[in-house]
Image (tube, rainbow, N blue to C red; front, side, top):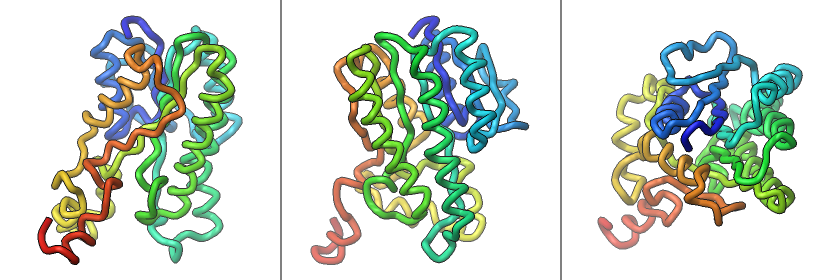
Length: 248
């Protein structure tokens, strides 16, 4: 990945910083994108773009600015957030906001960048296990499921140009995105661990390693797939097994 131009959205977040570190360590020229006001000054990046990914005009302008400096070799679509935990708290405004932040903005950005990209380039979308089974956050989950469909569209329609597109679907990652939940219930991390067959949450670095692999030439034959990085959460229902058969 030496000197490859790698676009990473949500670069200032917990996972975003791990992604930036992983690609920069491999010699990539990281192009960091985040919302206005984000402080990216401490990150090892060569270029930054601050814009609201839910704002189509700003997003398309950012895409033009990025490609003006050269075509991306990989785009890591990582930006996203949820606050509407259940159907009861997911009203019309929440639906619109979470779709824009977690799917529509990513679709606008990647569609705008795609024409400039050539053979050997790649997209990696960060979805969630929420797109594979229901763990709450209905609008967010729907948006992440849409990302998977969008990635498959790119893989299918741009594959003849040598462009790949894949998805990483993490389980729960202990990042600042969980702070608002843990403030309400400090026992939450310990109770969450019991849901995972491996007995722990995944780390940002583990997710970043999977993303790096799929973006790299080492995954040259892989496109159109969704890779869970979830310590076994979607492999089966451990609490159910414990109920019917004792401790697993």
